[in-house]
Image (cartoon, rainbow, N blue to C red; front, side, top):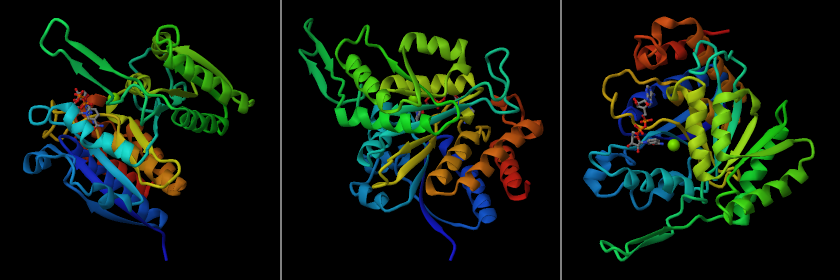
Length: 360
Ligand code: NAI
Ligand code: MG
């Protein structure tokens, strides 16, 4: 009996619906070569269409519906002219992240062969690091409110939440990752000079964790200079761990330094494996190019590789990443416009699937 994985597929909105099929095509090709089975169930919720029909982003029993899957393969959500972005995101993706305790958001940043970095003088291999973002608490809390609305005394308050459990577990995950990499380096993002209560606490917990990992060279940067160094010296970094807000910003900037946001993957991981983890590209639904068949599918396909790795198929995952890299490098004829080509979502996805199936 070959291994069988049950995958919940949620295309969402916009280009999510265009890149997810290419992601699946590549996953099926990898399954064929490596001899495992994928059982796919597709869901139409977490989309503007669903919201228009049901007045909610998700069915009330979404936790039961999705909870038993081995993983969730997600496209992108958002159609701001139909549903305000904070409603669509809080109503779907943020529910999954919190409800399934996906407390690690992992985003690799790698300059691949065949992709030109917007930064001058960088070769493939120069930029190769991992961003670990806290994904369930921190600055993204819904604690706060408005009082005296519409008057001169109008007051708005929103709190940051840091728990010892929440901070320690994401730091531990990042230190474990760093300990298993050749460079064994870790940088934590802070802003304890300006945010004088929660960030010194974050620093304190990070320093305590660093003492438990003497083999990992750990340091910290304030978020402002850290963003500058991402651009000026991206080769410095190996593992970067950050709170929810800082991690969100870094994980768009990092991939942008490595070429285009269209290729950047991400994983929302529940490391305890009590619940399914969710794999999605970093980009959103890109309403500006949706419907034209020109979205880059690589972010979605690479997210699929991260999913295979998480499921326990590291060889298949490596094959998918290798196929992405060789197609980007050797097939300028199929590249999408964001990569400087005139190919389509389907031509690039198809070439990668073929490479997975027939490559070395
Ligand atoms: P976006 O990532 O959708 O687009 C930003 C820019 O990058 C656009 O110019 C777009 O055309 C381009 N781009 C993105 N992905 C691309 C791809 N695969 N190939 C080629 N070009 C690509 O971010 P934006 O415009 O801020 O948000 C659009 C919608 O997506 C909003 O409704 C937002 O809330 C939602 N969103 C959803 C996310 C998610 O589902 N995880 C993440 C980010 C945004
Ligand atoms: Mg973001």
